[in-house]
Length: 116
Length: 109
Image (cartoon, rainbow over the protein chains, first blue to last red):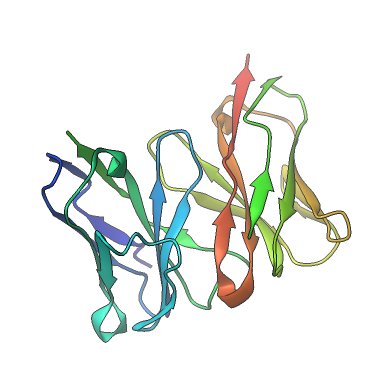
């Protein structure tokens, strides 16, 4: 079975520019997550979708970050305008059930963002 | 709110046994997961405990005590390839998975 696909793998932008990341979860997985992982830290949950509805976005900086999951499959995470502190790896994960039936999420390889 | 604490670094030698502890505070708790992440790689699932006790999967075991809000990951017969970061993660209300800051394990020859 194909894993979680993310693109681009790497992106370098200047502050105040915008960027978008794309995620295609494992087929049939209803729950999709976006995490932000700053170097040396654990993944921080930004937003969780169940099908195309938002379950939790309490940690999403909504003044600059937005995410959507149209048709309950692919998802896009956008940052506009970017700040230096947004430099991180953006990880997409999916699971069949919310939180994973056994706590198991399947992660993509991530999109590494550098903001200059 | 939710918080998890785990040691930032652990060092051990090949063939040894190492234990990585995790304590948590959470408003809703359904289980504790463990993930491994190699440098530049994606986190990969290792184990999950929903109930008290020990779960064993090959060289790796995970333990949970809900009354103590405590768990640990036990790695036996350490190999060089086990050098990685290990994260505990709490499964909370709504299936939210909150990660700790990670423990960097260095395995020396």
